[in-house]
Amino acid sequence: MFNKKYVSLCVVAGLFLSISVNCVVAGDANEAVAKKTIPDPFEQNERLGRGVNLGNALDAPNEGDWGVILKEEYFKIIKDAGFDSVRIPCRWSAHASNQPPYTIDKPFMDRVSWAIDNALKNDLYVMLNIHHYNELMNDPDGHTKRFYALWQQIAEHYKDYPDSLLLELLNEPRGKMGLKGWNQILKESLSVVRKSNPHRTVVVGPHNLNKVEYISRLEIPEEDRNIIVSIHYYEPSQFTHQGVEWLGESSKSWLGTKWMGTDREKHAIIKAFDRAVAWGKKHNRPINLGEFGTYEKADMASRVRWTEFIAKSAVQRGFSYHYWEFCHANFGAYDQETNAWKEPLLNAILQPDK
Ligand code: BGC
Image 1: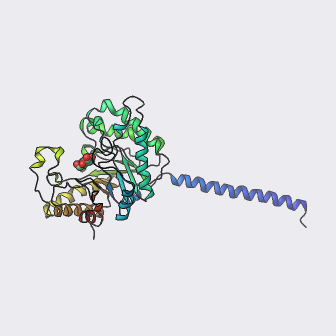
Image 2: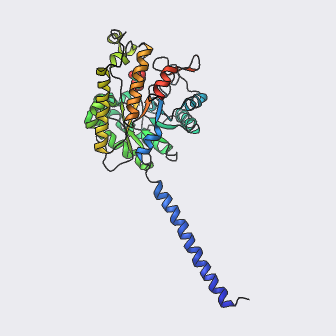
Image 3: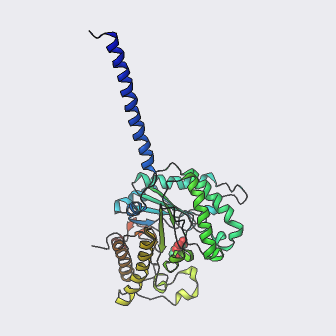
C-alpha cells in the first residue's frame, strides 16, 4: 500500500501538474485571443472574392421607394449562383434623429441586421457601408458629428459579429468635404469604429466617387493594417450611363454607345487598374472594386463584353469585386419580375476567366 508521505508527494505533484496544465490551457486561450487580433486584410479580400451589391434597397430613402425590397430567398439565390459576398449599401442618415445623440431608428437597424444575418447564414461575406449621405457631402461642417455618431452606434451594434462582416466608412466621398476634409473625416471615423471594433476589417475609398485617379491622395493611418481600399469604375460613362434619367439631357446623347473591346478601350481599363495595383503594392494594401456596372439602355452584347473584361482584369490583379447591382431593372443582373438571372451578365460577372 502507499504510505502517507508518498500520497502527499503525489498530491503535491498532481497539483503542480494540474497548475501547469491549467497554465498551458490558459496560455493557449490567451494565444487564441492574441491570434484573434487582426485578420489578414489580403485574406479577407480573397474571401470577399466575387460579389454583388444589394443596391437600390436599403440605400433608397425608404426601402421599396426605388422598386427593390429585399427578400430572404435572394441571399440563397446569390450564394447558389456562386457569389462569395454582398455589399449592402445603407442610407443610415435617413433613419436617425437630426439631434444629438442622433439615435438610429430601431426598425431600420433591425432591418439591416436581418439582411446581414441572412447573408452570413448563407455563407456570404458582407461589406456594410454608409451610402448616400448627401447632406454630409454638401455640408460637412453641419454633419460630421452626426456621421461619427452614426458610426459609433453601428460599430457598437455589430462589434461581436464575426470577421465576415466588413465595415465600409463612406460610399463615394465627394462634394464640399474636399480631399483634405475627407482624409480627416476618414481618420476620425476610423478611430470611432476602432474603439469598439479593434479587429474589424474596414474598407475605405479615395475622394471623388472612389475614383482610382484619386487613390494616391488617399491618407490612411499607417499603423492600421486591417484595411481594404475600394475603387469604383464606370468608364467610359458615355457607355455605362447612357440614357440614365438622373443625369439629365446629356446622357440621352450617349444612347447607342457601344463597347466593342478594342485595344484602345481595353487599354483605358488596364491603365486605371494598374494604377490601383501600383499604389496597393507601394502601400501594401489590398484592393476591392466596390462598384462597376452598366445601365440597361446599353446593348446587351456590349454590356457583357465590358463586364467580362472588367471582372477578368480584376481577378488577374487580385481585386475582390462587387457588381452594381443585384436586381433593380436598370443595372441589375437578376430580373425580379421573372425570378431569373440575366445569364450572359451573370456569367460575365462570375466566370470572366472561363
Ligand atoms: C449609386 C447608385 C447608382 C450607381 C451607378 C452608386 O454609387 O449609389 O445610385 O445607380 O452608383 O451610377
